[in-house]
Length: 159
Image (cartoon, rainbow, N blue to C red; front, side, top):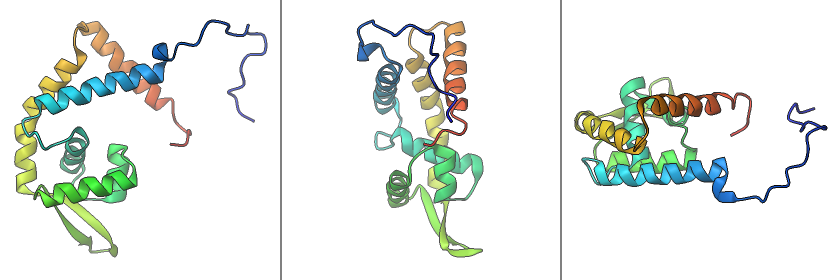
């Protein structure tokens, strides 16, 4: 039995449904805006935001399998495979077999990848600043808190 059953005594919502005012639509629009800002402000125009997150995960967690990258980045398996291929082709990461399990491939940041990350950090800070736009300091704290709360509330939800 799910505990998500609507309250039986609550009145039905009869207001017109406006998709443009729904949380999913607004989150998608905010993400699209952030992605556009990332592409305009990134100091490497070939680097996507997902590739940047992947490089940061390798910097933060060290050499990682693709399964570990999926967990660290919240990127699906098919997408991470393409990201790894593109980063490898650019010489930003290197791949090697896992010494403990030859079927696994370990991804590791190269010196070029680390140098790109170092160059990108000031750009990334500016991207975050621009993404927050006209929000004041309290609103910035609040939105980050609320987004984390939404994400943390997904414990046990498939996805």
